[in-house]
Amino acid sequence: MILVIAPATVLAQHRVSYVPDRSDAVIYQINIRTFSEDGNLKGITGRIDSIKNLGANVIYLMPIYPIGKIKSVNSTYCVSDYQSVNPEFGTLEDLKALVEHIHSRQMAVILDWVPNHTSYDHKWIGNKSWYLQDSTGKILSPPGTPWRDVAQLNFSNMDMRKEMISSMKYWIQAANIDGFRCDYADGPPFNFWKQTLDSLRSIDNHQLLMLAEGKRVDHYKAGFDYNFGFSFFEGLKDIFVKGKSAKLIDSLNKVEHLGATNGQEIVRYTTNHDVNGSDGTPQELFGGERAAMSAFIISAYMNSVPMIYNGQEVGTPYRLVFPFTSKNIDWTQHPSLTAEYKKILALRNKLEVLRKGKLSSYSTDDVCAFVKEIKGKKVFVLCNMRDKTVSLEIPKKWRNVSWKDAFSGSKKQFKAQVELKPFEYIVVNQ
Image (cartoon, rainbow, N blue to C red; front, side, top):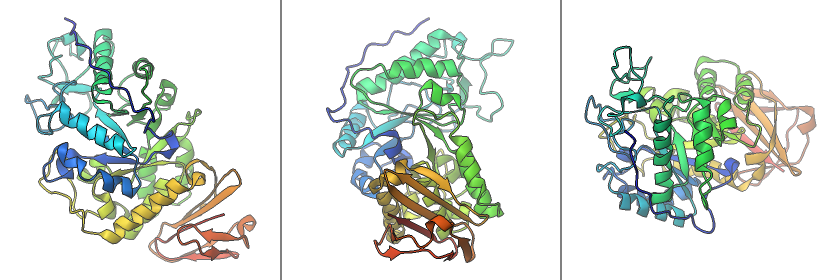
């Protein structure tokens, strides 16, 4: 049986696209259940201006689709219908209104897409050949995972692929969204992603951002704009918490960019829904608030596109447990920390050299240090990754050079060495 889907009304993007260049993006992840007291799409609208003021220009909505009831653990990644809105979150009209509001603020919207599996009561489940089966014909959950609430799709089935692509097109055409964050993108094969991205990018009048939650090098060749910085994140934790050399971050930065030969980027983060719920807040993961901010500035400035998880910017001190938590975010709890996030992101948005400059590393065992250069502009970033005062020997070419503090504008000049307080960061430019 092949499902026939009625064509959606096509909504063109605004004449001026609000999709930023790859390297100019700042992504803000929204867990709809925790974001507002209402826990729905309408509850997001009132905070869009705050997100824009923070410095973000791409809103990433976690899965909005109906959740299966068979074997359910209430996870939004257990999708029962790829072309409907979860009634818990609202309606298609609510989504369209939210997207229109976000676009009116010159920001883009991407949806979380769950390509590997569906719920056991998804409308596709009658097509057994669309799913992975054992020798007896029983549909399987994803092998090697604890995810027993979902059924693994079979990417060898061309009919399933076509319906998957059609479902993704539906949201672009019906709700005017600007791309997808593709969950566990390392699961589906390369030729599926190549087929999918070629098809999506053929839609007229729509510029898309495509984010692979994966680290396979061939994602770039398939046409993704971004891979996830898994290794970079783990490396940051190892340096801050386990005392590994800060030079590790340089090698991880290089490795993650292998294959990114056409301007693609790495999305980097210090928290997201997965690690926040299971491993801890940024303060827990990196050893306190100051350590978390030092980690964030490295993630935001070092050949990266930064991603912020809702509540991170106010220093939410408790975990937002996924898939469901009754805790809400107190948006007023840490105004000085929010101001610091704004300051860091505002500088990134202001300085092209931070977003697109060529990087030269000068890291030591304790300090992540790098210079970025473009079009005669330079920026020098130094971050102490230790809970103690350390000294950094300044490379000779950058000594006695006229800099200015990138945040305050005051003049600055380095001698042979600079002393950095615990978890202190310094950013200068010229």
